[in-house]
Length: 167
Ligand code: IMP
Ligand code: MG
Image (cartoon, rainbow, N blue to C red; front, side, top):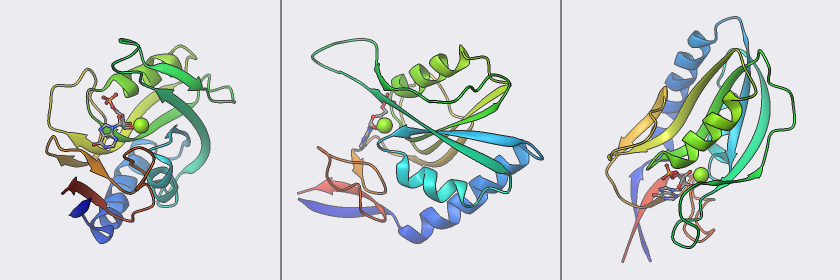
């Protein structure tokens, strides 16, 4: 299949620098626990945390959506391992589509009584969502994209840019 570049490696790098500045300001002088939503956000999280000016701890969480077969709730596959009570949490995801995945992560983490929870997504699709993100890298049209952590059937996560799959 043909790949059409939507956001270049350079554009991603530059945007992450400004996003990291905004996040560092929000959490000024505090420590952040960044919760990376696997698998899609692993590359974005790695690049983002290296630009943050605050102290940062990393946790991972995996939520899988069973759309089609098992309708409804997204399923928690892997949860964070440390206590986040009274901590400042930043949930990091790759893309906000319907919002189901981020909303599920948010409500699971909220129950653990952190001091503050903020959300950050690299991409946000143009459509009605059940949750909004506090920090957004790029707003994109409602197209299926791959690269920079995002996959299609587990492929293309390794691309350094965001691309649209065509034919
Ligand atoms: P939501 O729960 O509908 O917001 O979907 C979010 C999750 O679906 C993301 O974290 C991705 O894993 C996946 N996803 C949604 N849109 C795309 C896309 O265009 N390409 C690759 N994965 C996507
Ligand atoms: Mg995901």
